[in-house]
Image (cartoon, rainbow, N blue to C red):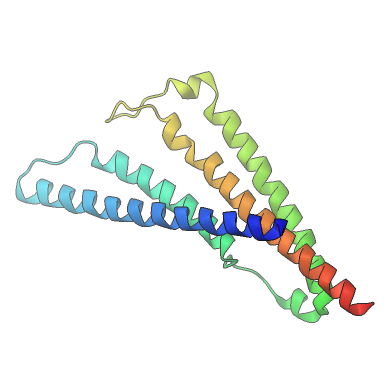
Length: 169
């Protein structure tokens, strides 16, 4: 019951991330198309387009990576898991998942520490004069989302491991 609730929340988070990535990509495309038209046809470029586009690209990339974690589509080397029994595969997946979860949590913690530093809080964008902390916050937010997806993956493997243990006895 508990795992189903967490898996449901995981699917909801992935859906929200998917909408965000699609919206950011569409907005990035529109801004750059308008920028090209204005620059080359009207000789009146948008002075802020490149800065905003880079920020959107960073957000889309980080949350796209989080979606890859959710769908378990990260690049892997699978010769070792293929050589193991199903039970061994689950144990390896749990160990690997916990290590990856610890790394994601560590990077998220570093990101929060970085974003909340006073000198970062007052930093402004060169062309937009908007605070940069909101752009930098993409890192800890995406790492937190990836951590949640990874936690759910570890819980699934633990559940499958328990099922295999119960089937063996």
